[in-house]
Image (cartoon, rainbow, N blue to C red):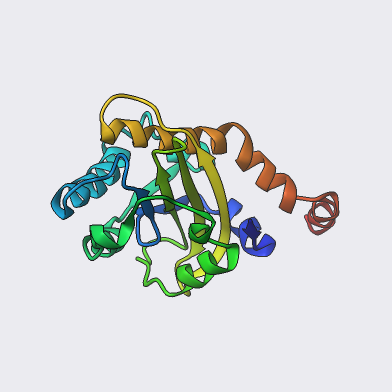
Amino acid sequence: MYLNEELFIDFLSVKEILWTGINFAKAHFTQKGFNFTQEILQHYFLDWNKLIINDQKKYDIRMSFRKPVMSYDLSMVTKINKGLKAANLVRSNIGIRDVLSDDQVREYIATLELPKSQRYALMILVESFDESTKMAALWMVVVRTEDSEPVLCEKFLKSPSGIGTRNYWARSFYNLLFDIKSHSFLRWENMVLKPDNAAEEGTNS
């Protein structure tokens, strides 16, 4: 996990943030469950991203991140996902070689040209969908848009469930957002709003 405390404190203060979508650029999928053509895999990339937008009551990013306003711009992630080839993503097995590190995620995020309509943006970076272990490895990313500076990068392992490929793996996104709403956001707040910080804020007010 990576957390820039200074930037995350500033992130907490803003009222509106930007959702940029689900990025599959670093993803790998087990051949079991993903023996799809290029066209079908691209269809799922679009479907999963549309699902977050179309069912905001269920995938409630605003509630998870305690923000009154959420804007959406999928242009960057849509372009990235369209350039991906199924042959480079699907593997017979997913092993330790596929595990991304904090540094690798931060280095990748820093290369992105993000939409800049808001000061901070959110993105899910998919590391893997592993049908063999029935587990999704997902990175929740917060980034400052003006310079693509990573603010928060944390990996979560979430189980899929449901009927059909789209709904089955979409459940892992729901479980991630539910985790953040119920536990992780408060954990992040507690990490940056330490007693020393609170005392300084009281002195300066």
